[in-house]
Image 1 (cartoon, helix red, strand yellow):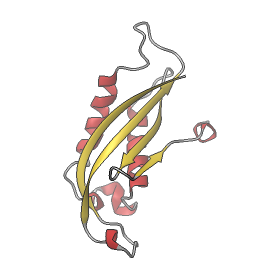
Image 2 (spheres, rainbow, N blue to C red):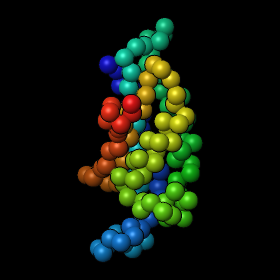
Image 3 (cartoon, one colour):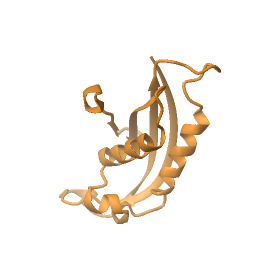
Amino acid sequence: MYEVMVEGSFSAAHNLRGYRKKCEKLHGHNWKIEVGIRGEKLDKTGMLIDFRKVKDYLEKIMEKLDHKYLNEISHFKVTNPTSENIARFIYNELKSRLKSSLYMVNRVTVWESDATSATYFQDKKDVE
């Protein structure tokens, strides 16, 4: 099994609805994103997937989030913009774009700070 990792970042503001502590107030982060793409076989050039392809799709997704107030983005008007939910949002967006029988989106980790992150992935049973 192989896993290719690509990183990206974006800056945005949010507030956590229903959270009765500091983060309920408007504040911002410089989020770091890590994407893992997994597969068993390499192509004829010896690659699972071209890094550039993953990075291009990730950049398109992050453009929707960068320098935005996340609570005003349609998806996060209903879903609280926690790091966990941002990871799932990016995972699902990537999954809809990177369709292949050779690889799949394995996981997305969202770093809210240097010391805190949340990862979203689907168990194999969730995929079948």
